[in-house]
Image (cartoon, rainbow, N blue to C red):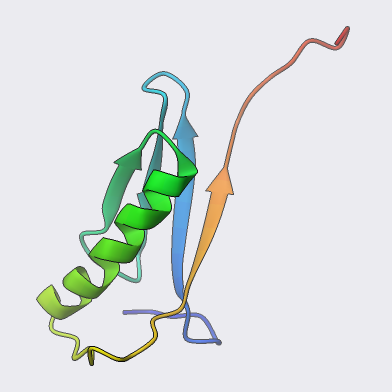
Amino acid sequence: MTESSTNAIEVTADWDAEAKVWVAVSEDVPGLVVEARSVDTLVAEIEALIPQLLKANGHHVEAQARIEYHLTAHVRSSLSAAA
């Protein structure tokens, strides 16, 4: 697991306009791929999966441990210049 200098897990989310869902992935947590229609749901699913996937990938995670993560969201869109 590669982590930033603050030891936070980096998660990136992109808006899929065609599917109308957020898609989040992380190179720091193998297997983390989450799709959700809202950011709130996305965050809840990320927070549920990160500890599970860290354990599944062989990382020792204590029940009381705090796991810091950074979620960066990207939206690509276009708008009319007349707006």
